[in-house]
Amino acid sequence: MNLIETARFNTLILLRFLTGDANALEKLDASSKGFWGSFRAAFIVEPISYLIFIVAALTTDDETSPIKLFLIIIGVAVVNWIVVPLLYAGISNVLKFNDRYGRMIVTRNWTQIILLAIFLPAHLLSISEVFTPAMTGMSLLSALLMSFAVSTVLIKGALQSTWWVAFGLTLVDFLVGLVAKIQIQNLF
Image (tube, rainbow, N blue to C red):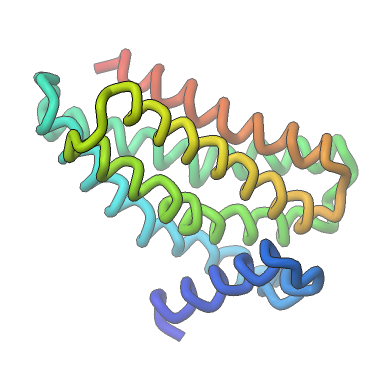
């Protein structure tokens, strides 16, 4: 399968799980080939994220150069696709989820496409200035909360853990991403 077919297949599996098919995550390829293959989701998510980030920066009064924007996106991508999975490896070891770590990372990586689909309309509406600033903020907050809920449900299913563990791991994931973005922006 090519990248688009693989992304479609795995995203549909995740959506089936979200809509009530409790055994859907069993169809994800959690082998070493599937594990490393799931990182190909970055080739879909990151270019679209970069374009949204560039367009958003160009439509505001921000004087950020395209090179700076590119470096920020690369830094955040490294954190999202390398640092967080390594952090999860350590946490999985402590929580004794080593046997389910591969399935969790495969699920997390393909979930990034769903999260992009959740955030894309909110970002496009904020760029187009259709809403007032308050409505734009509310749409982005709603997208964030929906993304958090989707991530928590999928991580819980992948780990077959409690809601608290899934909530904590999702919170760590989101906070690491937020802190990384802020710190990388402050570097430039």
